Length: 122
Image (cartoon, rainbow, N blue to C red; front, top):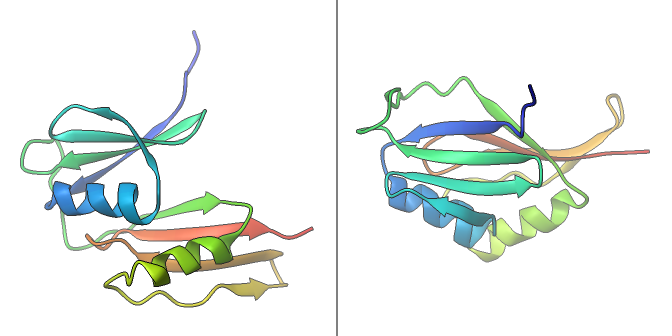
């Protein structure tokens, strides 16, 4: 037995807006479109799936007790990308946390899921 890769699913109310955010603003590659489920490659070993909550097995809720963290080589580049796209929600500038050895920022996607872009410092 072998696990090929994990897929994290977000159940969303506005699939079109979420798809546009991940594809057009963050630049993630849409690798499979099943109509009411969209799959984005995060790398060769993980995917993010967006599911239309009106059709999925889990319903969307206001409370989103999830943080999806992306380890990247340059969190400042993602911050700049969001600023240039004039993203509708507040995006705090990346900060360096010497106590835990990261540079990162956390913000919400259009549906309220918390996303973090971070780099481990050497």
